[in-house]
Length: 119
Image 1 (cartoon, rainbow, N blue to C red):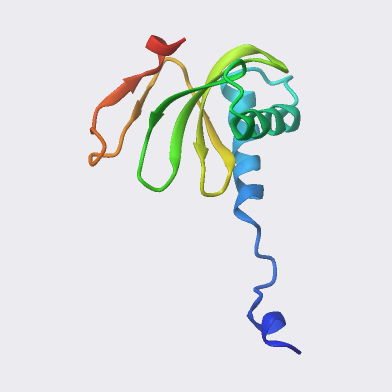
Image 2: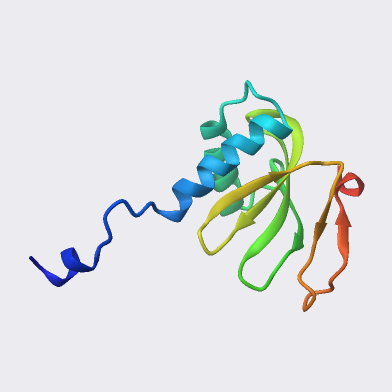
């Protein structure tokens, strides 16, 4: 048995798989249950990587570790909603309720962002 095989923990799930599970659940709860979460997930990642401002729009930096707030609209989805995207993991983390606010880290401004102002 090699060192790598000994170090690997069995049943360890990659963080992006956990993120997708959470993202798809929140998409169904907060936007529309009938949406294909995988298509939207892939479309968001692709649009952010390409800098496609027709499908995603950058709103704010939420913390210093790579979490950013994005508005999603158009593309494979006819709805407008907000996501938190983790740029270190390179994936969406959650879908936010548009009637709520998103808080920035105190080192950035500490102010809340009203999502309805960015629809």
